[in-house]
Length: 241
Image 1: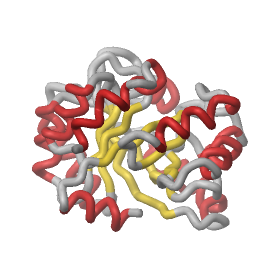
Image 2: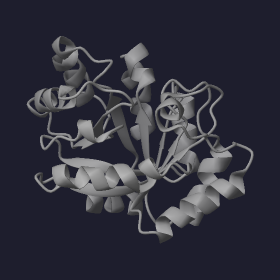
Image 3: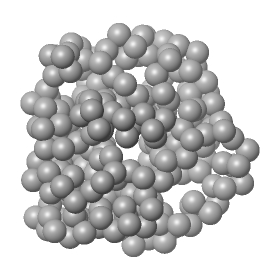
């Protein structure tokens, strides 16, 4: 999976992930949702959320895998969301914060579960960017987002993540963010990195998606846009032609 990401980056192929939050998704609707994703321009399905009932992720991923050939990647808010049914996992380290539990603590706790799976583990530097509202990530982790105006600090944080061995950097505005990650931040971070850049949070329009790609995002994640408007995919097709 990671090699495919690198190949896509080298060919400047646009990648799009749909984030499905188990806590917000009814099991009886997953067939319709997955079919819509299969018919769309999406290239990946991410599954996860800040707060999810234990075992719900396992059940949801199991159902999704029956319905799609797209890579299903865990985007876990906690170790209870780890399931062997997925293809891979974003091994998220919240490098924008200083809560040791989300820098290394949860990772250590997860090993006993991960070693029983065949998940492709993708070490990911996760950077929360100020978005105009308090997000679930802030509430759960007790960390503050990085100020939007301090671009150099954000760039340095991303580069530090790369030098520490992260294989991906994820710029996150947060679920339901009022404002997406600004193009100046995406561009500046991308210029500093040699690894793929993921951008998510607050992207609700085709123009916002286009801006993220043009600024340097290799993979863009949408969640709320799809939840609120399932025809959003139709609007995006021209961006991938």
